[in-house]
Image (cartoon, rainbow, N blue to C red; front, side):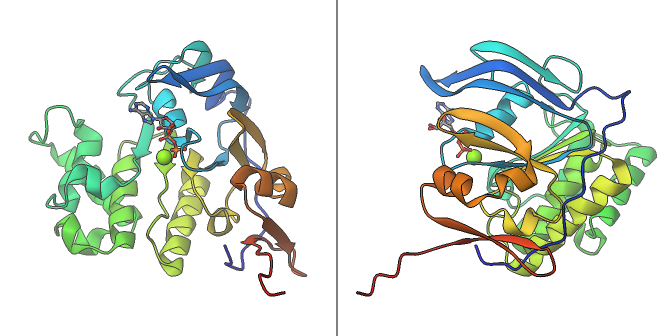
Length: 276
Ligand SMILES: Nc1ncnc2c1ncn2[C@@H]1O[C@H](COP(=O)(O)OP(=O)(O)O)[C@@H](O)[C@H]1O
Ligand SMILES: [Mg+2]
């Protein structure tokens, strides 16, 4: 937690004619008979860029699975892009946690992106020229044209993450869910992925929700955060979330917040000096 960040976050744009990207109304979620989180009530406007934070096991991935319609809630109401969650919703682009490990490393990049268009259920089918053009365009948009025909196993972590994002955007999603897309990336690659997310947000006005452990690289693009604290999801503007007391409570370890003379904001872990 030490990257000197960032410019001020831009506010989300929310045209009145678009329903919220996500509404939770007193939602309770359980897995294996145990409550993961409860009393979830929040509304994410279309066009927001939302950090999803909280310690390991707090239920960040679980939230995405609810949004994707993969996990029914125990009680309460969920609305995604103006409708109940449903499996296989093509308006959502999803980059799972540990994406490459989950999908197999031997897959060609271009084939992975094609799956984002043709669905994963029946594997690859013959594609039309129009579909291939869309795949090319998504690969180009993320800067992956140069390695499109290589296998995922031959790529760096940053390159793999670009391909994962290409798959998520190839079908023109209105909502992007990215689960720890910066994990295992070096600082430069983290910043390049964040830059890409910011650019996609500007160009497509897509709503973005991104799970992260370190907020710093994302602060330039985040408008707000959902934080899972003491078993409940909360949702606030990013400037209200980047507060020492809140982050220290959230992570159970001292976190400092620094604002530079230029107005940039960043967080850092703070240690008690062990020397006497
Ligand atoms: N498939 C599953 N079956 C039962 N419990 C699960 C399953 N997946 C996750 N959990 C539990 O749900 C809780 C939240 O997990 P998860 O959403 O993956 O947390 P996070 O992504 O914040 O680290 C954890 O206690 C975890 O053990
Ligand atoms: Mg997770």
